[in-house]
Image (cartoon, rainbow, N blue to C red; front, side):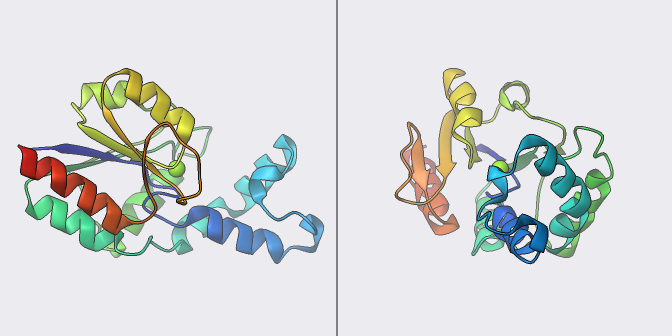
Length: 179
Ligand SMILES: [Mg+2]
């Protein structure tokens, strides 16, 4: 059995896509293409103002639900490990639980408030961790855990890359077959 650790924002869900849509609708942010490019103070303000809407309305990445169901059906444990809920944004914990339930996303466990995820990965015997952030994965790889970077195929990464959930399925299928 494999324990699969999964990040939420920009791995399970299309968070940046919706955040940028909201950004582009706002005159005050004119000319800024990506919300990650806002200065820290403006970014904090933008997040606090819009995060509830973003996390309620965000779309799942294509095939994420189907692949998670498939992994569960093949004996994998699904453990979400997310930074959500930290920095005084505890209100996002119930929002996230309700969202996952509405979208019928299966999971065995969810761990909030993890900016760094390596400790939670070790504690929960994670075999493979999927995340969109290189830095997050770097730490996890050092702990000898398999890492999968969710990113566009053009992105340069030290980690195994996947650009959609069907590639996640293919990667994990290979490991399941080796067992
Ligand atoms: Mg993420």
